Image (tube, rainbow, N blue to C red; front, side, top):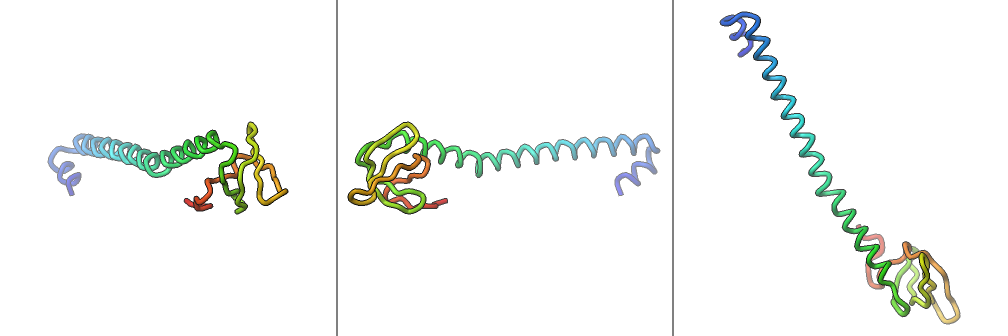
Amino acid sequence: MNTLLTILLFGGNAAQTAEGAQQGGSMWSSLIFIVLLIVVFWLFFIRPQSKKAKEEQKFRDSLQKGDRVVTIGGFHGKIVEVKDTTVVISLAPNTEVEVEKTALVKDGSRVGQA
């Protein structure tokens, strides 16, 4: 209705100018929407995931002999030896296994917790 009224009152050039202004406003609102979407993704997905990864790395770096751990497979054990990327765990008397540090969670922690 606005553009029809503009065409009738001012002719074709004014209508083209009004449409150009509307398209420019639409471009800015689309840009703001995209930026807002990126911020929401960062706040709800990327930031918590990186925070969790830092906590897991801190846990792996702090592993010591005697710590009780659970493997991601569900085996409970006690650390016997710590190496660079692996640890040796005692699961039962005379039963030791070597596993990657990335396959461990703290004893008592819920495995698979999101």
